Image 1 (cartoon, rainbow, N blue to C red):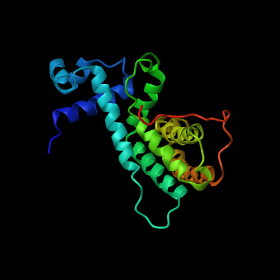
Image 2 (image 1 turned 90 degrees about the vertical axis):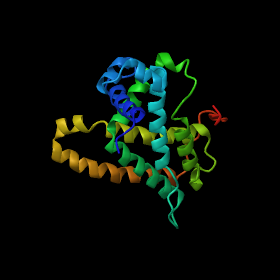
Image 3 (image 1 turned 180 degrees about the vertical axis):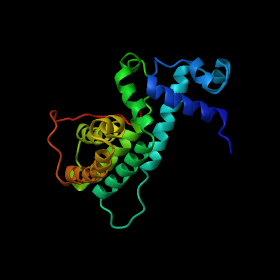
Image 4 (image 1 turned 45 degrees about the vertical axis):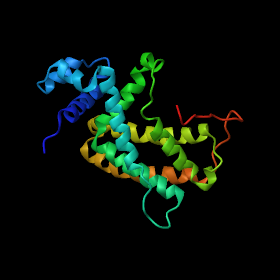
Amino acid sequence: MAKNTATQLLDVAERLFASQGFDGVSIASIADELGLTKQALLHHFGSKEALFGAVLQRISDQFQLLLVPPQAEQVNAAQQLEMRLLELYRAIRLKPAQSQLLMRELLDNNRRAASAKRWYLKPLLLQLMACVRDAPAWAKADDAQALALVYQLLGAINYFAISKPTLEGIFGDEAYAALDIVFEQQLRGLISAALASSPAPSASSDGLSINPQM
């Protein structure tokens, strides 16, 4: 069955936003790729900002589906987090443009962040923070401690996912293939080691408080 127009627009927009950033993409350039008019695109999404938001929402939804608790017996909290993050890592490797888009947005959104009304990836971060606190050693971790670990792990995953062309260029295809295997192995070890011991004390006794309703 052919994709509907809205899905096709999201696919094209995701690719263009990933390669050119929010400011580098126009409504016309997205519509042109599908042989549509600007008016047709605006009919579906209303504005470039709304389209960009829909792209981010779709990525967030896809990622959150991968974090559904594994249905496995006798799996401890560290193993559950490892399984979830590895699923996320493998999905990101298949669609590196999504990581590229998110990293580009982190660099480019300084101007728009001040007026942002919605943070599409916040539920994903909160979900991962809850996973971290499921580990006994991290049960009393404050928000700052849990978020710091989540961000370190996501940073490693996303940075590696978008580095394939560069690493292959520097070291060659065979070396990258070996690195690809070793990276996943070391990611497993990194997660296990991080959750095996209590987090380092926060600089603030109160830590960071994050309102889940924001």
